[in-house]
Length: 52
Image 1 (cartoon, rainbow, N blue to C red):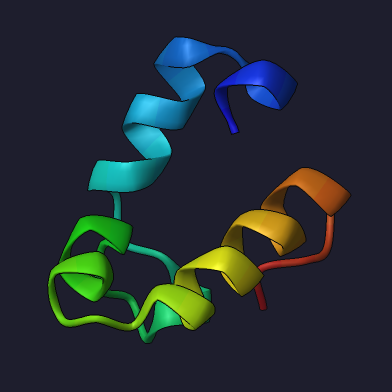
Image 2 (image 1 turned 30 degrees about the vertical axis):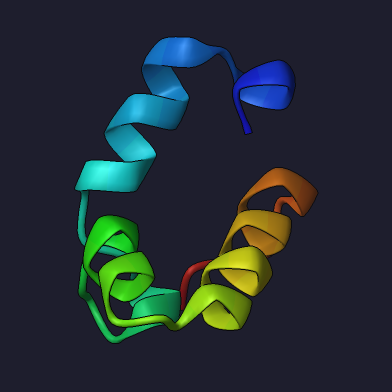
């Protein structure tokens, strides 16, 4: 994420609500062992897939 978008964007992405994670933060999803969902959300973000 940081390599593709920069450190500041990556930091904000990890602490912000994410529609791919049911509006939970990626940090929460990681804490809940939902790593695969987080990987999919990162790939969607970097790939430019819509957040709807």
